[in-house]
Amino acid sequence: MLDVEQLLSRFNPATGEISGVPVVKRHLGDLRGCFADPKAYEAALAQSNPLLYSVAAVEPAGGDGDLHYGVGMIMPGKIGDEYFMTKGHLHSWRPAAEFYFNLAGKGMMLLEDEATGESRMVELLPTVAVYVPGHTAHRTMNVGRTPLTYLGVYPAKAGHDYAAIARNNFRCAILERHGKPELIERKTLPSAASYP
Ligand SMILES: [Fe+2]
Image 1 (cartoon, rainbow, N blue to C red):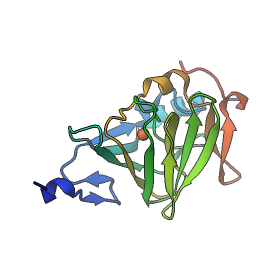
Image 2: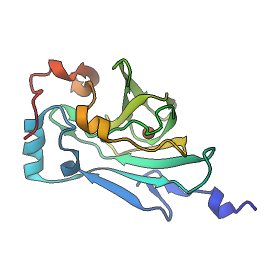
Image 3: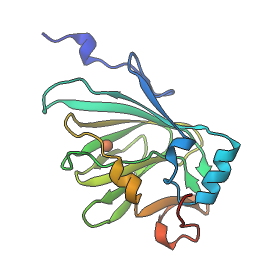
Image 4: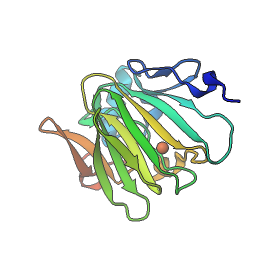
């Protein structure tokens, strides 16, 4: 039987919440090692530990053909010149692709091919859907001045692998240059240094 309550999700694009679904919150202190400028990171964290993003995911137990989805919300802000962003991940089942849809605000995605290291900066705007192919690390950032909310839809068996990113981070960072987001290789940054 089709249970309509199971088929519907009621989400709030302003808050990133899905009715009845727990919200996972990530604060600045949870993202040590992610930002390109360790000094700016430690200085900001010494001041306060703000909320950077939240995710509410709907992942019912089911078959491999099921779809899972989550609503994310990223706050506006920067560490140095780098926008507030998610930790980023690969899918545990590498062939799993994902669709991202903007719900509110102005976003950017950093995509990195796991095999080649090739990086791309892709706009996450209200009028576009971003298709993240399998075998591609993805990180989302808020490049606007208001909260960014978005919906991600992925195969039930995708899973999340954060460890690979925590080890090596992304090859590139997206920094604000002359008021606009720019894709920059991390190793070329003067601030590239290890975290304490
Ligand atoms: Fe994903």
